[in-house]
Length: 186
Image 1 (cartoon, rainbow, N blue to C red):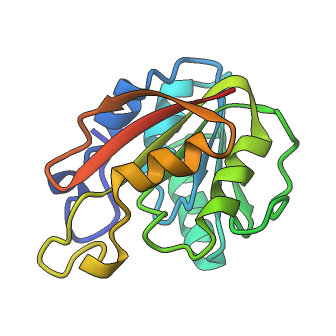
Image 2 (cartoon, one colour):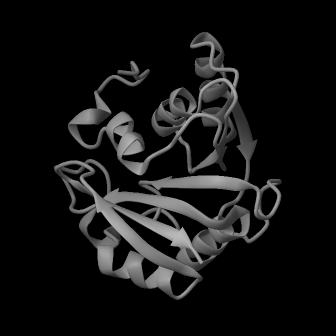
């Protein structure tokens, strides 16, 4: 298990290592972690893709990206590249179109205003047939995570992806207070 730099254990909410395993990330893949934050998913993805793979940790908060970069260096994960980007704007980061095998969008939909642009940015960078994993809060839990009015339902996520060039693949077990959905780019 990856040791997290924060004072609490995120796995009591959702286990990134388990979710990445269920997603089916394999060695050599090139993947993105949208809204990487403190890097829980980035580090789990970096381990899964191995030395020949690549993980792009994308966030708008430069201080979090710097901390994540330092953490990856300490962990000797040289396959992590931090990328500043605005995921609510199509082309808001410097990754090429149709260049990635997978993208993880964990705990991000409840924070963004333009959810359609976020889905379209994932579509832009994914190769045809590639997959996106959405892990999102299913409920508000004791003032941690999303507040009730910010919760985005699984039905809303399914509709967003369906209307923007994806098909639903399957669900994963993402934790007691989360849901996990996998979509495939058409």
